[in-house]
Image (spheres, rainbow, N blue to C red):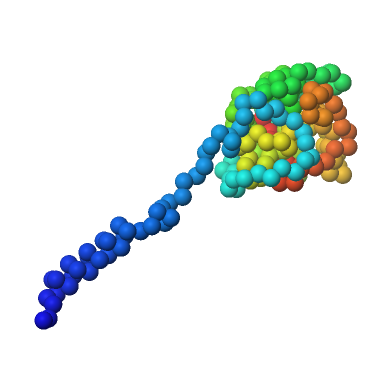
Length: 209
């Protein structure tokens, strides 16, 4: 008995509907895991470590503008900033989350002493809200170098570190002042022949306030 066109279409739609409704659970959209183990602990401290860590997470592209013109001015008194940093060399302070001996907290203290508008916070990227992202080739005294994790730049992980540039030399080296190196010491120290040596999986990012 011949089947009418209408009956054929109805049967086809019903079979397709059933096929979609009967899809196995394994075909459902995977859910990302945001368990506490993957989230920054409140007690982590920022310190220099050259130990390679295995880090999970998708690569995050920076959406911040990278300025490649070297004449972008600093918006603060660089001399006052460097004077305070120099005066602290050889001293030490307590370390721990947001403690004054941490490398980024010390860099903030020095920049703010010169009137720099370092008002950011939160993570190693949002900390530099209001700053201009530079290149190493355009770095100058008063700039901050941040070791940033490439795969997870907004995470406070072992290897994140912050230094202040006080001099730029013609051979590609810098004089820098940093705090909390070695990690946990809270010691402010000066290196007159420094080149960025970020741990594996990290990059050196230059910021100018």
